Image (cartoon, rainbow, N blue to C red; front, side, top):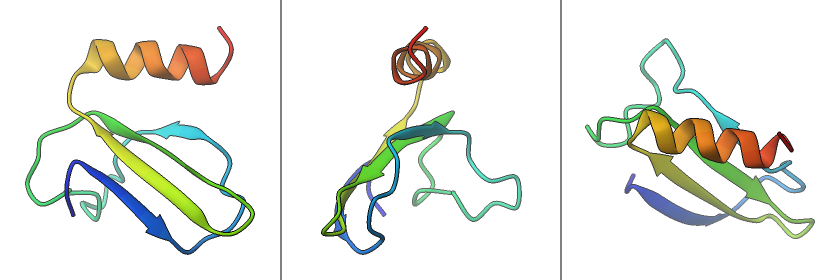
Length: 67
């Protein structure tokens, strides 16, 4: 997986910012990172952006959560 990916699959995934899974399944091809932004529409057109900086992660999370 790359740092960013567009995909077709899960429908209506709410826009969200998430930390990597503690089990290690979110390795993102070895990229170091603090989490990711993801979401999809009703047709399953989605995206995932890997966030490699803690300050950026916190800023994006604040925006998405309306803070």
